[in-house]
Structure formats: C-alpha cells, structure tokens
Length: 468
Image (cartoon, rainbow, N blue to C red; front, side, top):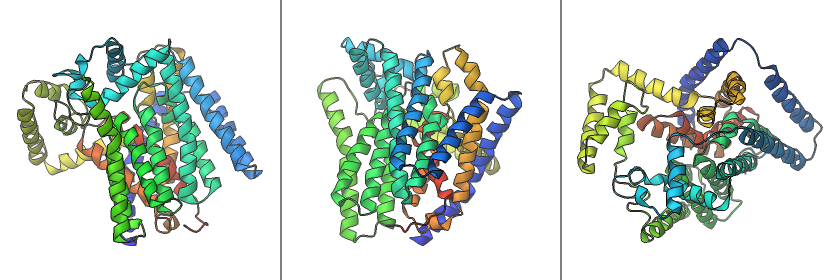
C-alpha cells in the first residue's frame, strides 16, 4: 500500500511540473496583455476572503459559516448567469435546436448517419433540453439558473467530501470557500453543457464511496454510489475513469478480506451500469435511438485520431475531419484510423513525440477557467466580455495558486501516506490525465473533474486528526 502511494506521489511530483509551468505561462500572457489592474475584482475577492478568515478566527458555528459560503457562491453564480445574455454555441446550439425537433416528434437526428447517431452520448442532454423547453417559457434562462443551483450544490458536496477526506470541518470550510469562488464553476454556470448536470452526481457518488471506505456505511451502500455515478455518466460519459479509480482503491487500500473486496467491486460495477442500460433500453424501445448510448454508428477511434494529430497537439482539425468523412463503412474507417495513428506514433522522431505529449498534456490542464468564459461568451458582445476578460489574469492567477498548493501538498507525507483517501483523488487525476492524453484534447473536457484540484490543494494543511 505504502509502496503504491509513494510511486503515485513521485510520479505526480514530476507530472504536475509542466502543468504549473504552462499555468504560469497563461498568467504571464494575460499580465502582459492587460496593462491595467481591475481594482474592483481585487477588492471584492480580497474582502470576501478576509471576512471568511475572520469568521473562522472567531470560531463561529461551522454550519453558519457554511450557509453563508453557499449563499455567497449562489449569489455569484446567479448574478453571472442572469446578467449575461448569451446563447448556446457549437455542439450546445446543436443539442438545443434538436430538442425542439424532438418535441415535434422528429427523432431523425438519432438515426442513420446523422450527428447524434454518430455521437449518441449527447442524447440525454437533448432530452433534458426538450424537458426544459416544455416546462419553461424562457428555457435558456431556466437552464442557466438550474446550472447555477447545481453548481451551488457542488459547494456543499465538496465540503462533505473534504470533511471526510481530511477529518476536519475547518479544512472542509476552506474547500467550500474555494469552490464558491472557483472560476470554472462560475463560468460554466452560463454554459449550456451537460457537465453541469453530471458533476453533482460524480461528487455525491464519491462522497458515498468514501463513507463506505471509512466504514461509516455498510458495504451494500456501494450500490447507491454506483447508481448515482451511473446517472452522472449518462450525461457526461467519462465516469468509467472514476469506476476504475474505485476498483483500484478497493484492491489496494480497502482493509477487508478478498470476499468483501470482490463483492464491493461487483456491486459498484453492476450498479453503475443500471442507469445506462435502463435508459438505453427505454429509448430504443420507444424508437428514439437506433444505436446504443455507448456506441454510435461512428467508431470512438475518431477521437483517438484527432488526439494523435501532431500539428494541432491533439485538438480538432480539418485534416482528420475530412479523413473521417471520406469513409462510409465504419469498420473500414476504424481499421484506417488505427493504421494512421500507428504511423503517426511510430514514424515520428522520439524527441518530437515527447514534445507533442508534453504540450498536449500540460495545456489540457493549465487553463484557469478550463475554457469556461470562452464558451459562456462566445456569441455575445456584452460589457461583461471586457470586464471578465480583464479579469482573466486573476482567474489564471487563482488557479496557479491552487496548483502550487496542490504541488506543495505532494510533499506532505501525513496526507498521502497516513490518509489513504487522498490517493483516491490522485488515482482519479492520473486516470483522466491518461484518457485525455490518448483522445482528443480540449480545455472543456477536463472541466468535469476540475474540483479535483480544490480537494488536492487542501493537502497543504497539516493533518493532526487520526485517520479512521
């Protein structure tokens, strides 16, 4: 157990360095571009933090402090989404438009070679948008307000997770305040993406899982953890990485016998699959879906192909888009992609290949808002553009500090050795780091686990409480 913890810790001490350097590059770029300081942003967040520290120093009731932190986070999110008059763009616009077609009884977008037949993992978001259209006259505002409420729920869930991970309400309150003011969670409240729905389910599942691992809940409760994660997965289908992290944690750190470990893994896996299989079965029987939610008419290798493009550092590009479009048969396409990916990786000089992966990996995790403000304001010319773009220096500086705290925490042996729960988050980060190293890269993709850095930054604190 200690050997594995030391191995992961040593690896992360190396892997976090390029992210921190790239993050510092963002800070430098924005500092160079914006010559003036936004004194209002500085004063606002400085005073907020001072008040928070004052409340902690006066030892006010933690529940009262938490309520004020949550309300503060809610106010920030509601102000942002209500005052920003924006519209869905790119894939988000496509899903919103198709939701109206769905309400009119048109399911063609999920059939044949249409876009959502190629990428059926977007189906649940289309249906969610359709439901909001049916319930609310101003559906776009309703979606953003719901996003803000769900993002506020994340504040409370991070508090619960941090309290269990660190056995400290004070540390958990720090986690809640960081979550309340965390730029990505504020920015994405105004973005019409499925991550807003999925994230609370991811977090709640992790909280329940930790309770079981700390023997505060019965092993059978893992069914609930798996079910909750499975619901989040049908909205943002990358939760399988969390499942793998669960399994690894159970095998390495769960102090139970072989039978109990095997049972725990089985419960997690079966429960995780239930929401997706159930939703898939219902949608296919209703004639809505032609293909399964987890496998459309286009091979998932297309993401690997885009992720292997050396010229664009694994981002979307026209070259690969045209290559994919030139095939009618999916099996032939998959075979051709595998050959092309193999050629790119085997015929590229090793130094160039290492540089490619280094840049792709570091830039994937280095953006302070994970691309949130771009997606929120891509179609608007409102005054907030100038205000918030000017604030991007502080957004990236905020994130840079979080990364530094995370890195310093890697040297705190009382956390990663004495507190095995922390290794769950380290393993999870490694899993997503590997996933996005192989597949297509985009700042938004890592947003679903941006909360990881909040919890990992808390490892900088001393750990005086005994692990239970």
